[in-house]
Length: 233
Image (cartoon, rainbow, N blue to C red; front, top):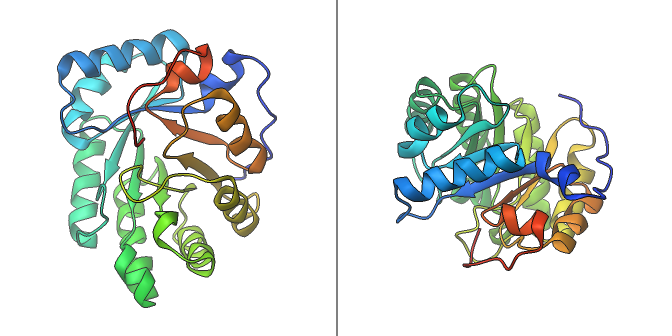
């Protein structure tokens, strides 16, 4: 995919299509998922992003709409094998996932075992062929050079996006990291900012730095100005 610069949203309805409305907390139940899906349909968010076990319900809720079903894979540690991640991806796709947000093998990247990381991403890419793949690099655990390397590996494996964070580690998205990632991938890949984005101004700052997708559990707060609740994602 080729990603052009995203214009800064001026109205809530301009921001909504860039938001992955996210619900990844382990205690989320069916009522929470249904509410999240209804919010996404009402505000026309880009997707609802959930854990794999919740993909069937969310896909059913969103069926026939323009809102996509997104599943995380290898989440949140990235510390499963490439085979496991591919199997998890195939299962999510089978149950209706339109997009996959995978966590890379962070330890292998930090060790410099780049072929392991490359194969990790490639396995998931193959398992979700024809669907959008976002690669979570967990920027808070990496040096700037490691961030650039992770972005290049994602591009080599033909991912569609690089993504800053899980929102479950030691930090979330920063303007500096989004800018670095955009500079590294150019217009070839999308950049998704996620983790700690809870208000309109923060979302706009991420987009100005180069993000063209926002992951947030506070999607409604972002576009309505209502107080955001919780921490993390």
